[in-house]
Image 1 (cartoon, rainbow, N blue to C red):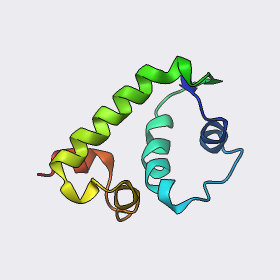
Image 2 (image 1 turned 45 degrees about the vertical axis):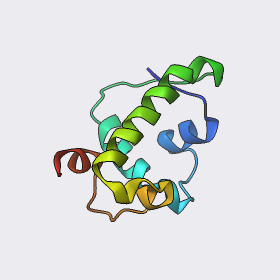
Image 3 (image 1 turned 120 degrees about the horizontal axis):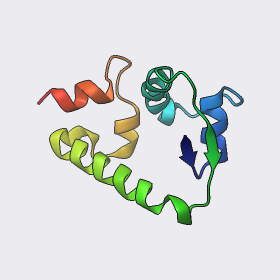
Length: 94
C-alpha cells in the first residue's frame, strides 16, 4: 500500500498525470523502478496530518544524504543531479 498526501504525486506515479516539474524528475526516475518491483500495489490519498511520520522520515533521509554530499544541501541542486545519479549510489559513494 502506497499512502501519500499529494494527489498529484499519486496520479504521477499511477501514470495519470505527467511529471512536468524538472525539479522532481530525479525523484520520479528513482521511484518508478522501485514500484515496478511490486506485483501488486495500491495507492491511497491521506491527509497531511496522517502523513507526519513519513514526512519526518523523509526529511531525515534528506538531511543524512546532504551531510554526506554537501552539494545536495540546496534542494534545487539535489533535484537537478545528473541522470546517472540514483539514490542508491548517492548513499554508496563517499
